[in-house]
Image (cartoon, rainbow, N blue to C red; front, side, top):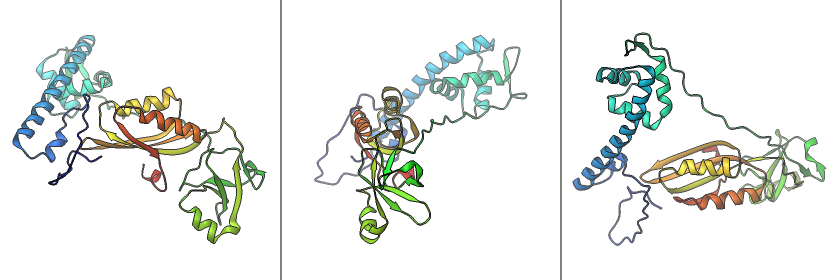
Length: 293
């Protein structure tokens, strides 16, 4: 995959992936060359913006009626100032994109159907929802003993989960670190410090959950993020710790930290995510990748 901004060279052979859900973006204006392309993008984005704004206008009119507020140009400019926007059209667009914004209208002083910002109440910042964190500890057998009686933790460089082949490494200050046997650091530890390596295996317990990460890449279709989130939390009932997506020129990259009970559950999740339209590649996060989320 390459972004739309990728410059083609003579002789390149390309395949263009299309989607009915893809819409032109103003960001495309940063790299398109021809005037025809620029004008087409500007028209499409402007038309799309106005269409969304029309939906917001209907929602706002209904709310104004409930508040017994006048739908006048003066009131619309007051709302634009309240939301720190440039015009009433931007207000309509904002309401359409985030319907909860109309609830903030009750914080504005209303006199004879007209809004006044003189006594407007401060709007509280939207609270960020925190995902429920599950216990990290699991039933491990280290040197044949119950790991719960030992000081151990899972190595961040490879984030092992049940089902992975693992080994324990006696660290100097942090007790025993549990690594995957295919961890990039494993060869060095086993060859240079074999006397500090201890035999470790899982004692299966489906009630425990482990933090791990996955990475997604694909086409930036509308609704991809919500589909991914719904699949993980609703369909598969897997708890997420954090999720982040970045989009550039029609290509997105997402990183998700989540809790799974074992490797099999993680593999099922990856297969399910690959089936979503617009998702091209899904794989488990490896060394240091999870630290960037």
